[in-house]
Length: 364
Image (tube, rainbow, N blue to C red; front, top):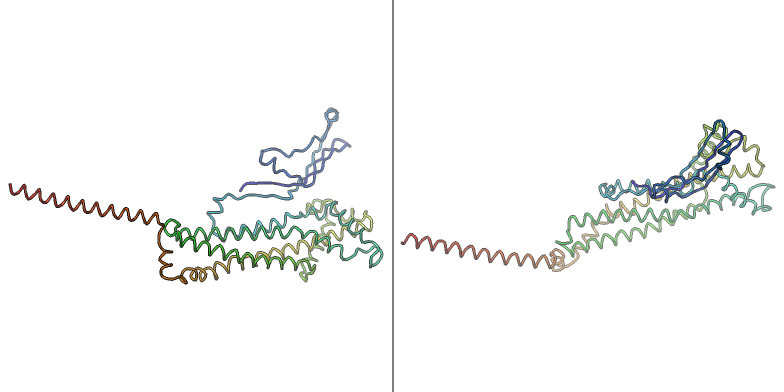
């Protein structure tokens, strides 16, 4: 595999005595550096004059989180794999693409909390108790987060169809070579492609319906509350025991916040927990429907009768034409047959001439 692009969030800091020099960068794209073999591009943290005055130990800390990593599998690796292995790889990449839409760090970042605060402040004074967050706020936030989902689902659907069509076309070319049976090869290939296109259109409607269902924010799965309780429990752990995306939060830091910010942190936790549940549910539904409508049904159920109907429903003359070789091959066969016939006649003439010569020799 080859890394095509990488987007990271990083922070670096140098501590010299009681002075600290730091630099933060959110979601920096390192695609160019990867292709050119370059480095991280971290700017200079200390000026030359400050560096000259350094005495004693220097502490350097760097925190790097990969937000998105895109890799490309070499074609020969894909071609050598069975269709089931290729589809399994596409499933893993689909799940990974859902995960990389928004990292865990994003949900617990100060930027996301500010976004929530802006949404909450715009709904002040509505129906509800004083200081309470309107229930539609997290629903609107989730709606905004879901905007990127259709493109991810469509990409996965297209890649699965391409993989199936490519494998079927290779089988058709193997059993019905285009040079030997051009018309039959074309007929079967077109029928297969039409079948997969029709199934993809049906599947697109199913996927649109699944994405529409996700607009209803609800679930009876205990996984949601389990995730919420797990995060709240982690906030009381020591910093080294907490997940990387919770390093900037703790029970102590939350207690120092205002009441409004504490409510925002609670909303961050709940939105993160629901998004995590929704991703798993959506991935299962999308993968299951795709395997059913674009793999199992076309290949195991629909393909064979469709091909039989396309070929055997034609008349005998049309069927003979389908099984006929290419015109250039027929012409070449005729030329070779005519040449073989001439050679046979020449051989017969030479044999007869040889017999006559032997008779004349014996007669003398």
